[in-house]
Image 1 (tube, one colour):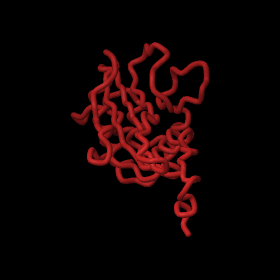
Image 2 (cartoon, helix red, strand yellow; image 1 turned 135 degrees about the vertical axis):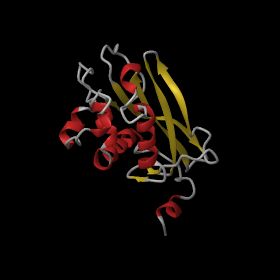
Image 3 (tube, one colour; image 1 turned 60 degrees about the vertical axis):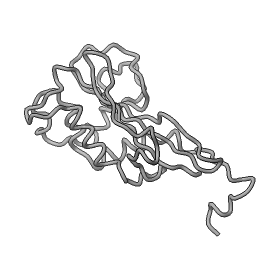
Image 4 (cartoon, one colour; image 1 turned 90 degrees about the vertical axis):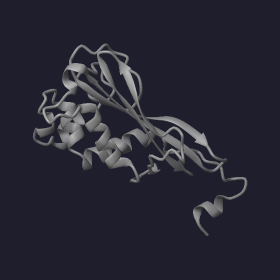
Length: 186
């Protein structure tokens, strides 16, 4: 008997017991398997894409840990920007944005990846934009990828109309919002 079969009946209710870990798990995958995003977040110069790879501790230093001064952080586990940004930087925000229950057991959790860049640092010397390159990297890493504690992420409008890439931000920090989803049954 499978776990799902043993839960069929009155006990088959999804508790979404790992929801609080979703953002962290995505950042962990990003730290372990991608270099480009981190280089684009740390370095503000047009050649950021061509800089040397960051160490794990350098990447960890870019993740906001709840400290009073968020100005040195570039990766956040929630939406919104409570502090005024005064530097010409780029930031990435990763968070669950919605849950659509399909039934009492299965729900579709949508994760939003927001990338914002100051206009003056968005263009790169390789004739690409920082924001589009980060979106490309995120799609390459997460689309169709099994993420521990989350499930297999998808970018599929037939499965969830939440899945899309849209413009976002407020001048001079403009960017994009990328939404991928996963089916969760816990």
